[in-house]
Amino acid sequence: MLALSRKKNEALVINNNIEITVLEIKGEQVKLGISAPRDVPIYRKEVYVQIQEANKEAVNADGLKSLKDLLG
Image (cartoon, helix red, strand yellow):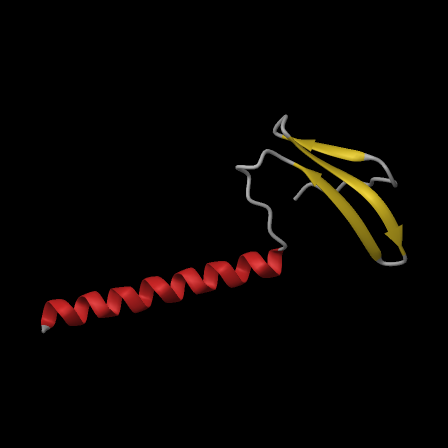
């Protein structure tokens, strides 16, 4: 993991086409702005984890159904 210090209105650039800017700092909360191409999905980590878990459950459910269908 790369750890960087940034102040308000300072930014990072990732892969030449994603820019993350520190918009505001209030106490322990930091507000970030992200500029990226529309085809780049951006999720909060807790939402991303929920999506991944739902996908795993869907694959497992479909896999079990397919197996039951094969076995009769």
